[in-house]
Image 1 (cartoon, rainbow, N blue to C red):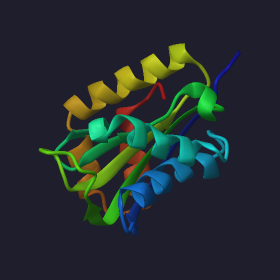
Image 2 (image 1 turned 45 degrees about the horizontal axis):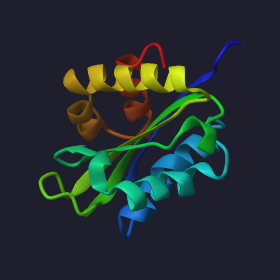
Image 3 (image 1 turned 30 degrees about the vertical axis):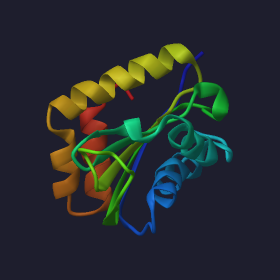
Length: 148
């Protein structure tokens, strides 16, 4: 079965708090057809249940839920917020950049997460923050994740 990969990005997204920020990032996946309509709320529940562990490093959150929570295809989205929001992380708040991903199955989930980790260690977050707009962000994300 071929899995369609979707990569998209949005900049200057307004969010009044972390829930809105998470929903905005996950909604980019829904809009792109990679996730079902229930996926944004599932991503919010992940943080409500487990705390702000998705805030991986200064200013960066990795938004996701389980594949069965609405992943239809491999999808990755980047959202740069208009103003940073607090997640309650003791070291890495506030968050200004969110990477969201979804997958249709557990194997793709692990592979996508691995690809994102490699790209982040290679400076992806800084390049996305420096991007000139949505098209530039999308191009950077596609270049960083050629297998996504």
